[in-house]
Length: 112
Image (cartoon, rainbow, N blue to C red):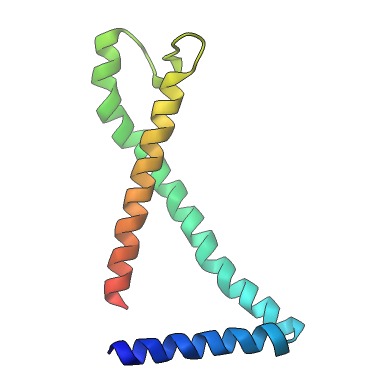
């Protein structure tokens, strides 16, 4: 199994080298389109995950805490002129998106 993976990697590297040095413009267009599809899908998934976090997870986590300290929304948490609430929200959003994308890529790696 490991030998076939190494051979597949060598074949891919050889194909990329041939494309880089001998490919024509149409080949490059096809490669860019093939690379664009997963990139657009990843951005779409990240936006979807961000929406789930903003509309479901963050209110569950932050509403009891904010109500306890008398603040209506995370965005209105300001300390010394710094928008600490917005930063904390963005940090939580980033951590959840990275965690979910990591789990998804590990799942896909096991399927391939």
